[in-house]
Length: 355
Image (cartoon, rainbow, N blue to C red):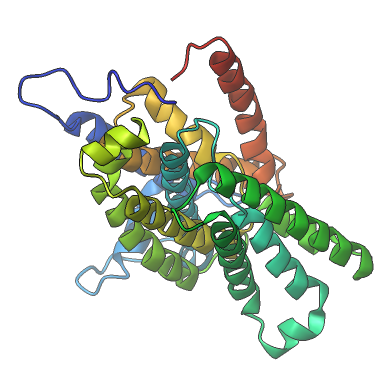
């Protein structure tokens, strides 16, 4: 159980939001965003980036003293890609924060109750049966979204009983459904076309096909879910107490559980549907905030989203530039960062030095 002894800031005026720290983090994230848009096989200066971007607004009219290809690279490739990386990173990070608070488990992540396995199964069905994509080329993200939502819904209804939702049973049912869906995914990969690289590429995550419409659709899920998460962040503080204490304080636990699960699942499903499975973002970003800032969920939820956006921007930039013209799946980069951090958390938890 999380240590809540230092959740409430110790000042006579009550909770104080760290505005300066957030402004600094936003500024750093924007710097990463700009650098990611500039760096690539073709370097584009920040000044050219600014002028090309502003030229899309009717009131600006800079003299186009840059190659025409710069506009194509920025507007059609890098800007939507980096923007989607920021959106997905923020979504996975705050979804992980919600699950860690809800399950009172610092090792929980957005894929805990089956979202990843469901999305993988949906995507594998589409990729392994080419005739489906011939009917509708855009069906892959739809199938992944439906798969993720279906897996979590099945896990939820297995865990729910007449008394309410048992979170321990939800984790176990999530593991069972994930194992089943994983087995079906593997079977489809074995029985399908021998070239399984498209499936493996999707399973490791990639932003190579990013488009502006993907950013808009994902943001349509992320924005309202983020608002709900911020509103319920105080409730996440309260439910770190024993359930009976939380009920004494007037918290409707069943309503909070259901709302948080729906919020985190919708966000996770929307994120993975376009970019595939990107691991460890929802695990390490909330802990980075805990270690640096605070364990208060009123700070954790928005701060984790910012850190997640910055982390995935840097990871994607590394994935597409570290080997020159060859691009790595982004999941490889996040795994190299996440696994050592995960081991660190396990060691800290073992010795009882982390809440």
